[in-house]
Image (cartoon, rainbow, N blue to C red; front, side, top):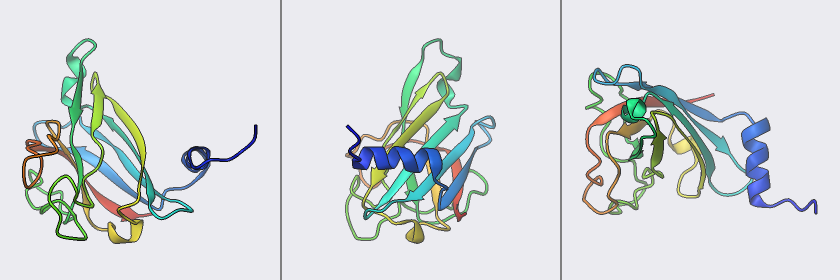
Length: 162
């Protein structure tokens, strides 16, 4: 069967396509080895495809260790200092957490490494250029306002157009 589905088209985009934007993630002073990329791809549908690959997450020394980490798009693209100038979660409309446009799926770190890809219809690449991707030290509880009680910002990258 050679039928194309959205999933097979997304796989083709990830393998053969070029991202429309990218954020190079760097760790804060407590996690200087944290690094990675978050890529944003246009799709033929409303929405974008996001691929994240992160190294050096805090559980890397635990044998078989795994942990969830919150990942969000924040309003401002200022990754200076301890990432205190990134603003709130990006949101096109006044919605409570976890319904902000910038509330992304969590990362699952396995001994310090995480990879994920997902489709998101709430944002377009053009509206996130210049904003930041933040990795938090804890999982998002998807309840606490205004940002899910995800803890310190341990990784940051400014979203730039490719």
